[in-house]
Amino acid sequence: MKSFLELVQTRQSDRSYLPTPVEAEKLERILEAARLAPSACNGQPWKFIVVTAPEKRMLVADAASSKVLSMNHFTKQAPVQLVLIEESTNFTSAIGGWATNKHYPHIDLGIVAAHICLAAADEGLGSCIIGWCNEKKLGKALNIPKAKRPMLVILLGYTNQPLREKSRKPMNEIVSFETY
Image (cartoon, rainbow, N blue to C red; front, side, top):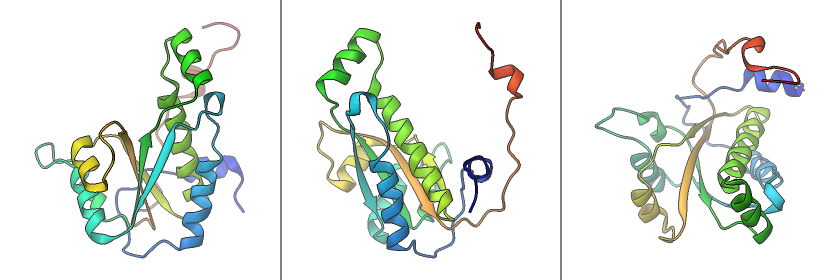
């Protein structure tokens, strides 16, 4: 079993997937990790749509890719797509967001996305968070109410890519103590 730091060191954004289906029990554990993610004032401002049917996956992939910009065409390969929908938060989180001029649901969706990707890595799966998507196309494909906003698509599957070395800023460039 990997330590948490080892898990973080080996988790990467995968852009090529094997056609192997993801086992239901692995997907259930990933979704449970998402369900248990923290959120501001426990608002849990999310809904997850699990997409595995091939025809639906192609619709989601089309909404999350661009022919003009030539990006995200690998989305068709992933056997599982999780679409994260921003839902209303609770009163306390909404008031706190107003008082601090922060939209906590966006922060919360980032936290839950991290939980999903790390849980996937723990299950031996690759993942990739896709932020670029045609929201109207995605909404139509998945019957998302117009008042709801699809924020992210997370691809899950068995990676077809080797582990890459991470390129990150050195610690002294991003961390300071007691002052900026």
